[in-house]
Image (cartoon, rainbow, N blue to C red; front, side, top):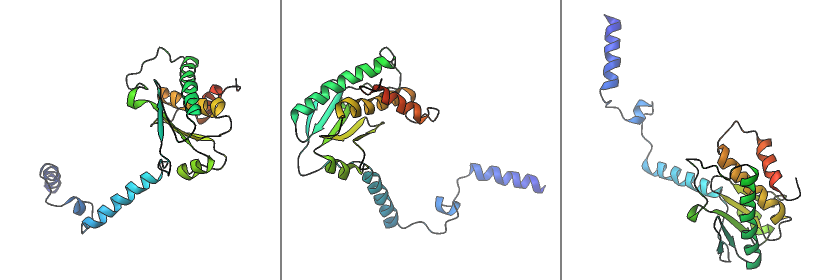
Length: 200
């Protein structure tokens, strides 16, 4: 009789809503005060924002767009225009090299309108490093999921190496999956290096 009573109690426990709060069921005697939970939420949000590059500065950002790209710059319109032209050419070439010109994936979002790849060009290395937290040796980096490339005016070999390298990371990762753990890092880097001019 004892085992059937225990079974009945377990079934009732699952079917009848518990009068205990979530905190009490978890073993916490008192719920966290509201002000503490708000502070924790604010700290988490600030922490997330702190990992994103800072886009504000004394100078205002200007924008130049093409079919698949948006270039944000503060100086040198001619260079921003060249970046757009090179980016479009690299985008087509990388997709061609990877055999993706006729591939349409259900979950893939086209690089159009507000989903265009964004390229941020800081005025110099110091502004770039200060805004992004990038190491001293870095000439650029990419945020795959958000389709964002960051660099600065005067970055060595930007048009020939950095830009195609970072774009290849985005195109390749979109195809194989951003969180695909089966793709080794060396393959991702190899594809990106293959896209660089003069590396083939």
